[in-house]
Length: 380
Ligand code: PMP
Ligand code: GLN
Image (tube, rainbow, N blue to C red; front, side, top):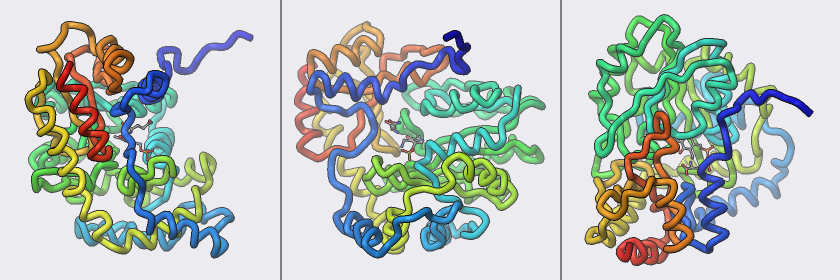
C-alpha cells in the first residue's frame, strides 16, 4: 500500500524510547516524567467508592459538574479568578488531549503558532497536522530567559496562537510576573490566543508564585489553560486533566472535544471532585517536591555535572560538558546501558535538535531511588 504520511518527520516520542531502553537494561528510570511512589490511598479509595456507588457510565460531555465546581473553586482560592463551571471548564483525558483539542479547534492552514524551545514534544505535531506553522523561539541554557523584543519581532498577521508553559518542561524554569506583563503588552489589542500549559502549577520552588495566565486580565480573555491531575496527584496513568477558557473559546473547544473523546473516565472524576475540595492536597505539593529536588541536588553537588536548581516542575537539567564531548543522545543512551541510569536528552526539544550538552532528570521518585541515582551520577 502506498500512502503519504501527514507527519513524515515525526518518529516515536522520546519518552517511550527512553523508558523502553531503561526497562530493557534495568536502569533507574529518571527519564519519562512520572512518580515511582503511590498516589494517596484516600484518593484510590474514593475511586473505588465511586465505582461501587454506580458512577460507571458516561460522564456528561464537558465533565462531571461536581468536578467542574471543585476546579472552579480552586481557581477562586488560588488566583481569585473565576471560571464558570457550566461554560468555561471542560474535563479532559489529560493535558495532552486538551492541548491537541485546542489546537485542532483553532488552528487552520498556514496559521502561525509561536512556541518557546526547548518545548514539550506534543505541541509541534499537533500544529503541523492541523496545517499550521510552528514558529520557534530558542531559549538558551542555563537561564532560558525570554527576549520579549525578539518575540515581538516574530509576530505577524498570521500569528494565531502563542503557547507558553510555566513552570517549563523540560528546562525547569518559570515565567516571572514581568514576563507575563511583557506577553500581555506585546499581544495587547490583537486576537492572538494564548495556550498556557500549566500542568506544573503546583510545583514551584523557593517561595516563588505561579504566574497563571488567569491573573492577567488582558491575557485571560484570550487564553486557554491546560492542567493535569496526573501531574498534580501522582497518577499519570489515569490520564485526567482539564481545560479552562472564556465561554466563547470553550464553545469552540467543546465542538471538537465532543467528537474527539465525548467524555472521560467517570469514577475518577467523582473521586477527584471530593479530593480537590481539601486545599491541603495541592497546597502541600511545593514543599513535597522541593524536598526531593534539594535531596537530589545535595547528593550530586560534588559530581562532575553542573546545574542551576530547578525553579519548578519535577525535572532537573544537568550539564555534562565537563564529562564528555559526546552528543546528548549518545550520552543518554550510554548512561542507560552502561551506568544503568536513564534521562532525557534535551536536544529533541530544541530548534533543529541543537545539542547543548544537557540532560533532563525526573526527581519525582522515592528518596531511596534518588539516593541510588545520585550514587551512580557521582561516579560518572
Ligand atoms: N504538558 C507538559 C508540559 C507536560 O509535561 C505533560 C506531561 N505531563 C503534559 C502536557 C501532558 O499531561 P498529561 O499527562 O495530563 O496528558
Ligand atoms: N510529561 C512527561 C514528561 O515530560 C511525559 C508524558 C509522556 O510520556 N507522554 O516526561
